[in-house]
Amino acid sequence: MRRTNVQTLGEILRDFFEDNPEIYEKIMEARIERTWPKVLGPMAQQYTSHMYIRDRILYVYMKSAVLRSELLLCKDKLRDSINKELGSGYLFDLVIR
Image (cartoon, rainbow, N blue to C red):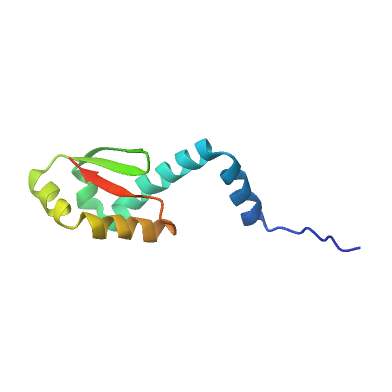
């Protein structure tokens, strides 16, 4: 006998996270923290002092004023690169301080 309602594990997990947005937010925050050094490289990670996400906006605090100003010039492209790496349009904006 065949089952009619067959779902893949990925579909089951996606449904679970859609029903539990608090868990989804925490997982996306962890994925963004892992994605940040991939997109910018290890040197930029050294100058990042703190980052957090609130209302789908990534706030990043940089130790270097020079790097901060360079990142501010290309923050839209940086946001798009992070979203592309995540595979979704999760981040709305990027604030660099």
